[in-house]
Amino acid sequence: MPAAGGPGRAARPCPAPAADGGPPAADEGLARAHSRRRPAGHRERKKLETRRRIFRSAFELFALRGFDGTTVEEIAKRARVAKGTVFNYFPHKSAFLLAAHHEWMAHLEDDLGPVDSWEGSARSRLDRVLKYLTDLSIENREISRMVIFESMRETYLRMGTPGAPDPDRGTRPMEELTEAVIRRGKTTGDIRPDVDDGQAASVIAATVFSTLVRWLVEGGSARSVKAALAAKLDIIFTGLAP
Image 1 (spheres, rainbow, N blue to C red):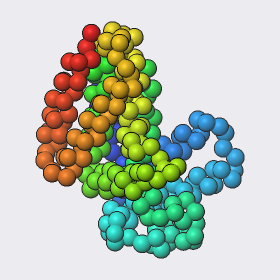
Image 2 (cartoon, helix red, strand yellow; image 1 turned 90 degrees about the vertical axis):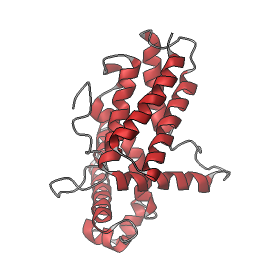
Image 3 (cartoon, helix red, strand yellow; image 1 turned 60 degrees about the vertical axis):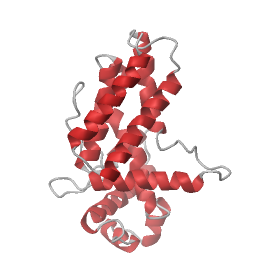
Image 4 (cartoon, rainbow, N blue to C red; image 1 turned 135 degrees about the horizontal axis):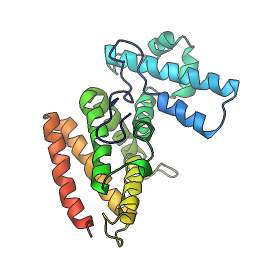
């Protein structure tokens, strides 16, 4: 895992089959997160292993047959569990996409290390995050499209519902990571001290999200989406500079 520059294992967090035909490693971040929180007992480890096996099996099938062409029965058979066990972990098929969306960001810090350990300016640290995310989207375009659009659909359906999640939760993990970069940039003098961390992070996260969504819808080259993000961040960082 590189500490600077691009992530050497960019495709690993995406829930797609490995290049060698083996199972995807998309759920490994969840296992690492659990292991850091507390020592897992036998029952917890078994549940986590079952969840990971179901998750991996689902995305193997999605890659082979497509999301719509895969049934829960097929996922259960591939994972060697009962159909009811699948529903215990993933209440509906689209829950696989929502889980992937949230774990995508969870992998980033696992692979790149804590934000405070990154070298360089605030802009270079943020560029590292964006390279990681765009590389994932580029290498796994169809899965990225499903994951992002399902998250958007769920957010839309739940808006205005009492007790529903924050409508901005699709960009929330990105905002939290960006906010840490902004705070660090203020301490190193890269960013104006009067800048509101949360507002700056929200603007950047929304810009990244909307740019990726537009690229997934309209198409275009990897170079074009990276150039678009760079140009927009140039404008934002002009306003953030001391």
